Length: 108
Image (cartoon, rainbow, N blue to C red; front, side):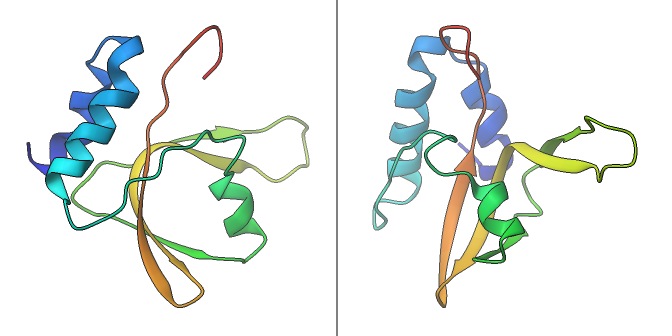
């Protein structure tokens, strides 16, 4: 599997298999790294970036899919990353963060 198709291929999997597929493929692509799985409400990367606690550089070889929230006129548009492979710089360490969004039990 090539990195460019990683997210696309993951989202083609049955919903109850997506998380397993992603973890297995990441472990095969990067056997020297630790793979941690989490939920967006437990680790809100967008909020962490807005608070300037880390910085993000997108992987240019993977399409970054984002949505924009605009709740009230006059308020700032807020981008939310849905699907992307990112390099995150935190406390002087560079991490790969893969964000993949899918529906599960009526939640994204």
